Length: 482
Ligand SMILES: C[S@@+](CC[C@H](N)C(=O)[O-])C[C@H]1O[C@@H](n2cnc3c(N)ncnc32)[C@H](O)[C@@H]1O
Image (cartoon, rainbow, N blue to C red; front, side, top):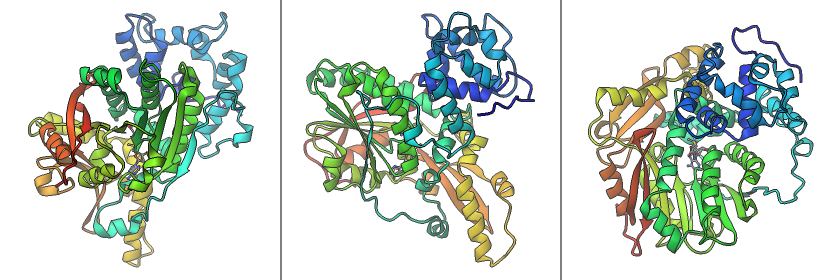
């Protein structure tokens, strides 16, 4: 690896340094990295400021106030296990090659390897060459199982019907890297909001009671790729439960092998940081959560009670009726469901509407949609039988996002909901590239109950009161749905 000395102002090779630190320490977002490094009692606020500073440092500023967020760098050598001669100033001033030399010997090879992943996307090292120990002694290698997800609506078919099938955004080889970049960016705080909300949900009384009486033995995270630190949070929680002895089955069900792979590699590396991790049986299942069938039960879950999770606003990307119908094919009375959703108690004010839409105007999110935009522009050029195609830059700059009531938009099955629609107009036709629905909590709860899922508890994320985590239980007598 050759380290390029950056000619940019600011901290040399800051992007690579933070990438290496995040992966070595097990942080997926900037907030997680700041929280991990500044984790002493009383440092919560400082960590919040450091989260902002990480973004500013990436953009080219330098740490100034040594009694402020710059303390991140002072705390870092200890967290990375560097020897006593290494301090924050050395880490700031070093280029990436020197920075890696400051790491303890056992971490250097892994750091170089991680960097190769990030600077040469898709050049993942061959498994056999990977340097971190996966020799098998106690290391939990996640299993990948293949189910039959059914035929996928092609991008071209989707374009004909006016909406891109959102699964496609995750089927591009670069999707896992694009997703990681997106959740790290300041424009998309949803990942951290969701994780903080999950932490609160795990502390609510109804959940505590379940865990002391009849805890679930299987956790099934639906559309679960790309959230490895939420997985670690949940696994840590389950492994600590006194009522849960023996193995715990943890399944990640996802339509994208790229996203599954990212999570699997992450979990393989960081699971050993949890006590008693050998009890966790991780199974990654390539499947469509809208097309699960009764035959999939043994693949997805173990015996006894299961808890399903659909986190990170994914419900809002899909037909809610299709989701609950599919879920009911693999769930049993007494099973539980964690469901995340952005909510509005009443019609959104201009400020709230703007905040919802702004997330979708961010360059990182737009970049995520680039493969779909390329296909849309190509498809329209083909239709016109034209050799001239609008450039991707022009197409990307014309993407729009707005919030629409579903009384007009009909992107959702749940009454009185609102949907952020990210669209591109080509040749006077509007193509929806992505849609994300927000709900009135009472309507979401009623809708779920029509499918036999009764609300046990609901909490707001401490980071955003409009980000809700709902806990449902499947009742004994299933109703017919709507
Ligand atoms: C927003 S991302 C990550 C969500 C993540 N579980 C979280 O909590 O942040 C959405 C994930 O859902 C997956 N996905 C989308 N539609 C799916 C479907 N119909 N079936 C299975 N996975 C799906 C994508 O491949 C992607 O990994």
